[in-house]
Length: 265
Image (tube, rainbow, N blue to C red; front, side):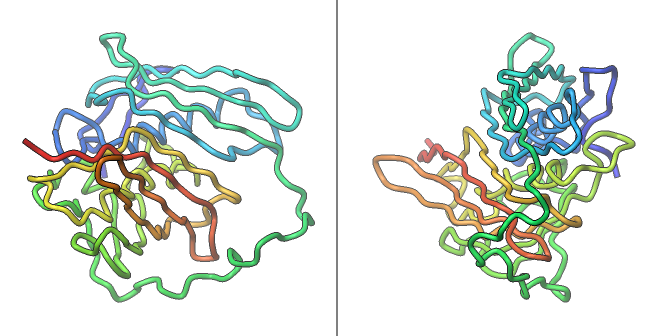
């Protein structure tokens, strides 16, 4: 399958049609560029025994399906923790996304376990469920990103009153010729929390995120990510999407998105 990006030089990436989102063919789904910024922070001045702990991406506007220049810097260095910042800029010089991440020292293997609720492996992986490759929002584009992920629903989905349990996996490479890292796989999918829980008519209502914040207590194992996602909205105020993230072995972390809730027209 076509990758999301092809690397042109050290900091420049060609965006392919696989990145296009559900509403406009010329604008990217925020999952792939969020993962691209995480990749930049993963490879920036790496040190043995360090890992990304959380990634917070702010979406500064529509991300064009066009070449992106990615830069990264260390905001705060340290022996056991460091704060990194990455930015994706379009050819017109406009920053499209900015992300910050804490990269921390890995915990010792014998560190005591805390909160046992994450130790139980999920038993609801739908091995015989029909494969759902494509968008999950009625009336949205079925090409691009929608063809690059696979969803298998356990419960909820469109019309499910904003709560969904779904397994998903990325089907293509983030950058051509590379295997996606665990963090990259999580971010490509986690931005879809609002999409897999969408239960309103998109011709009448919009529910669009302006950020994506993911924190992982451990790295994803394998390709499949389980999302226990819930959309919440309060009339006169706003909304959020909260995700509990797991793999086949158990819970790995959480995701959070701030949502702009609007009536169309």
